[in-house]
Structure formats: C-alpha cells, structure tokens
Length: 294
Image 1 (cartoon, one colour):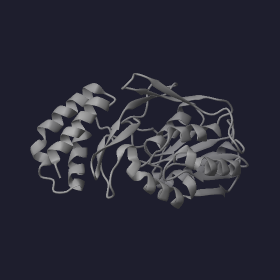
Image 2 (cartoon, rainbow, N blue to C red):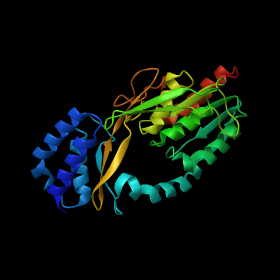
Image 3 (cartoon, rainbow, N blue to C red):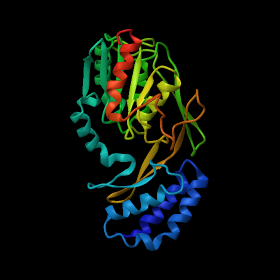
Image 4 (cartoon, one colour):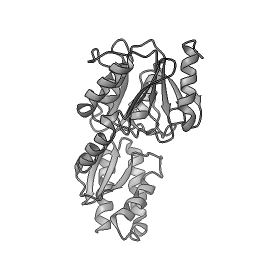
C-alpha cells in the first residue's frame, strides 16, 4: 500500500472538487502535515479510519471521508452498485413496511435508502396508492441513511397538489445550479396536500432522508417527530484512490427556497422532539388528535 501516493491523490481531488475551496486548502495543509501519522496504518481499512477523522476535523462534513471497500473500489460508487441492489431487494424496493394503524392512520416506512428513482419509482407508487385511502399518514425515516434527490422529489409529488420548488444544488466546479421540483404528475393516486402528515426521524436519519424531512417541514406540509437528524446536506462524488479505497467529496451545496439555507451540521430539528423509539406512538397520537379521534 503506497500511503504517500494515496494521500497525494486525495489532496489533489479535494483541492479540485470540494465545494468549499477555502476548506479544501485547509484540509490539503492538514493532510500534508499528518504524513507520519498515516504511516502507522498497516491496512487500507486502518488508513481509511485515520484519514476520515482528519477530513472531518475542519468543518465536520460527514459526507467527506475515505471509504474502505472490501471489494475493489471504482469511480463514482460503482463498487457499491451490487450492494445497493442487494439492499434494495432486502428492503422490499425501499418500502419495507406499509400498514394501517388504528383510527385511519397509515404508517409507511421508507428504508434503508431513498433508492435511485429508476429502481424505486414502482414500489413508491404502489405504496402511496395504498396509503391514499388513509385519513392521516406517518412516513418513517428513522432507519433511512439518504439517497437520491430525484426520489425525494418523487415522494413529495404524492404529498403536494401542484409542482413545488423543493431544493437547489449549487455546484462549485462550473458555478451552475440544479433545481428540484415536485412533479406535476405522478402515477397511481396522490395522498394530496391537505391531510395530516408526520415524518419520523432519528439521529441516524441522514442526507437525502434529511432533505425529504427538511423540504416538507419548510413547506409546512409535515410535522417532524423524533430526534435531530445527522446533518449531512452536501451531495458528493466518489473517486478511487486505491483498489480498496474511495474518497467521497461533496461537490455542491443545498439551498432550500424557503429557508435560504440547509441542514448541514445542525440536522433537521424536529417539531416534536422525542426519543426515536417513541416517535411512532407520539405521531400516531398527534394524528388521532388532529382527526378529532384522540
């Protein structure tokens, strides 16, 4: 394992791609000064731990890390595609649970990721068609680690009555931006924009799952119940720097059109703060009260 080459390659990618150039410069200097520390690593996995600690030490960006892969790493997460496909199957296409609670309240879990839309659209459509018959809805994101912003927009399409601006990603590399809107049309049946919606969160809720929570909260469309989320708002790219190591680098920042900011580092703050394992019961009670059935 050529540690100096791995660190040099990582530093170069940071300077070229990281969304905040001034932070990239500070990280470049920090990694350079830590060369002797990294020399203590005897395996790629050990090196990944040491470098990740340093990458996150300047501004706490949890998307910024050196990721170890048991199988060979490739550019832009290619190494994880088979794992994602396996996870998708194990979680019923990203919808592991749909059920009806007492009082006409539906409980819909989206986990373990908001999988790429080309994979998850069919299962999400089926799930929302089912819950469209309920009087209130609880969306459970407590075990959701993130995912695709296109899938976030797709889910929002079932909860809003008209196309709505949800989020904008501003990139560093060409100073461009990409807006995300809820779609004007979704297949199946919408839950719609008026019936009560509650979103469950935990400290493990992260990235794209945070965006879904935050977007709905800022629009006043959902009540967030549970714990403050992990605080990762920057979309990222992956770059192989060793056969088993991938550096993940945020290349853009999210800007919500309502708040003008995002949930980076601070997380999504729940409207009703309770321990994650109590969130479902609390949201169910809140829904029944809202429906006059409490």
